[in-house]
Amino acid sequence: MKTLWTVVAVIGLFFVVASPAHALVVNCATVSGPTELTAAAILCPQFNGPGTLQDISITISGTITGTFSFTNTSTSGSELAMGTTTSDFSAGPLTGFTFVNPLFSASFSSGLRTILSGQTLTIVGLTDSGNATVSDTTNFAPYIGAGTFSIPVNTSTLGQFGGGGHIISSQTTSASATAVVTYNLAVPEPGSILLLGTGLVGCAGAAWRARRRM
Image (tube, rainbow, N blue to C red; front, side, top):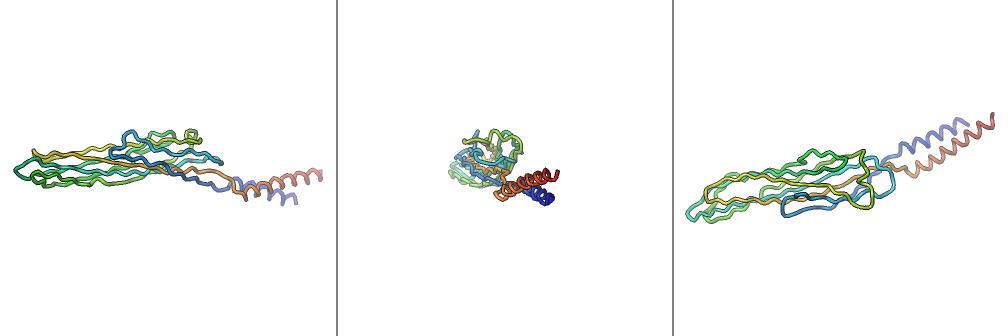
């Protein structure tokens, strides 16, 4: 009988230790603008609940959209123009997390275009999106509380243009970013807690029986 009580105790303790982790998933605010994301920040809710944090995972998503504009100021004939551009989306720094920047890059080439006399040609071409997931298993302090924490994000665009002597070229870039934070927790199941109680009773019973036999 003593052996049975001991086995019950061990099973109860095992279920508590092996109880599955839970995930609390929260959505962060979206930051966007009609221009580049320069020194922008995504605001995310801190963890403010029961349970013990095991790790934090952040998935950042971003979009980049851009246009080219060519204007031929000549009044006597058409001219050729072209442009290429690349825009990088980066994040961080953020305590406990390591970002491989850029998280993604968007590129576009207009190809060679014929711009008629007095014409303005606008090309919507730079359109891309991407995401990346990073995890933190050690630095939890900045992410626990009743407030928010911020994830720095930034876009940087470089364009090259060419054309006839009467061509005026320009580009615009807009971007947006958001994030999803997953707080992975170790929370005992109600059944595990019950088994823990049973295990403790088993331990007490085994000890009591051992004393009676002494």
